[in-house]
Length: 121
Length: 105
Image (cartoon, rainbow over all chains, first blue to last red; front, side, top):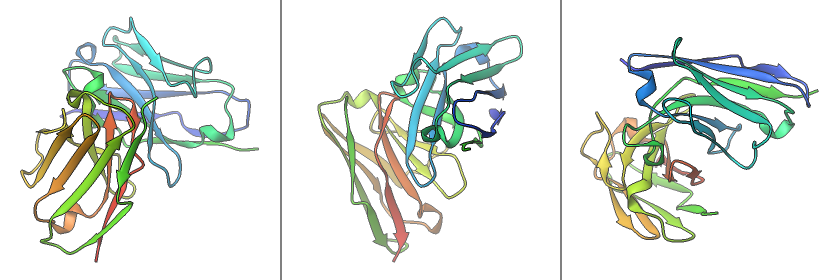
């Protein structure tokens, strides 16, 4: 059974940093691209970042480019999202998601339960 | 940047009804990369359809997808009580539509 478990969310002040983690199990981690998708309260999902199976390629939405960095550790089957220079607009539930085996452009077939990030003074 | 516009915003139907949800792209997209998700309150999105018309693993056959170019449709042939939720389309693993809420009439 595929399992994705996010952690690391919480309350942070504007301008602060946070590192999210996503522990993956139940599948061959390096065989799948992984992504972060966020959802602000009452809004639809918003793609944030994607990393290839072996971590050699990364992609970030314009809204977070230069502030967020996605990475992965195949020795622990963990996905990370380093978030710097956080603003109130980054307040959201952050989900990690596994891309379909055909590639991440096809969509995401497994999702974690999400971790809430609140940016507020 | 491609924008996905879903309509209607809310669909009020009864169990057993047929639901037809629309997703229109601001420019032509490859149907290979169009997906649909279902989301219930407090839950993560769930993949229903990928490549415009392929059901994801475990998705009942009352869900079907169609379309090409700029117009895509998700159809639920006969609504079950558990189908009342918000539905999102997505293209290229990146852009999401704003969602259609299917509510009980």
